[in-house]
Amino acid sequence: MSSSKNNIEIANNSKNNNLLSTGDKSVFLVIPAYNEENALGNLLENLVRFDYKIVVVDDGSKDETYLIAKSIKEKFQNNIFLCKHLINRGVGAATKTGMEDALIHGAKYIITFDADGQHAIEDIEKVTKALIENRADVVIGSRPFKDMPFSKRVANMIMNFITLLFYKVAVKDSQSGLRGYDALVIPKLNIHSDGYGALSEFTREIKKNNLKLEEVEITTIYTPETQAKGTNAIVGFKIFVKMVRDIFR
Image 1 (spheres, one colour):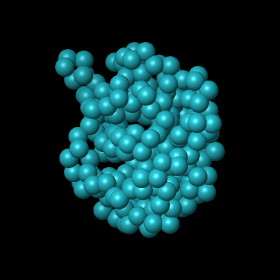
Image 2 (cartoon, one colour):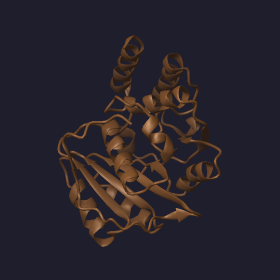
Image 3 (cartoon, helix red, strand yellow):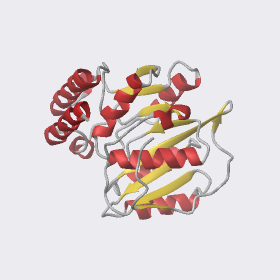
Image 4 (cartoon, one colour):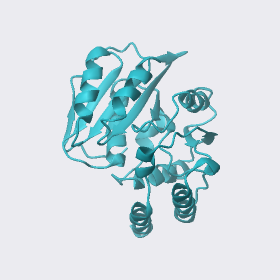
């Protein structure tokens, strides 16, 4: 997987290899976080109760995100791994950093999970199950359109169409942040975008590498904070331009 090592700090992570396993399958959560001081602490406190291994990537936050993650890590040394970008690089860059750190610590399955509290923890099992049962190399947690706020629904429909048009991959939710990957496929994924465009690039790489894809329906918790984040018209236009460039590269 292509990514830059610049402007990254990795906290002193425990080298304990007593990884969370389902059978002999090690599962890591990767959580990119940018200015998430209001949601991250509660999310991590809930996740560690399930004994998940968690990689938090602070993407150059200007608030207390890193300090909150660090304080929780100090209580759960063997469960939380912490990385920090010195500058804000984007969700794509943070995801790549988190995946690389998870691989270093022995992950067999990697689940990406948004830091803003929009995902239901119970849905992690849905995504992981398809990987462990070898039904898929990549799993996308698809948010039901009927439950989306209107602006999100329109933006997602447009991005799904653009992903199909440029990358020839039909998915129900091209912008979902809850996804699962067999760790063996991660090095095959050639991701250039550091921003939200990385989500569509991950989808492109599924087809390019002939990977098995499964989509599972997930629950999404919409709050004013979660609705303010993610793909909007401006972000969508930037992704569109990036896709056009990819074609002629």
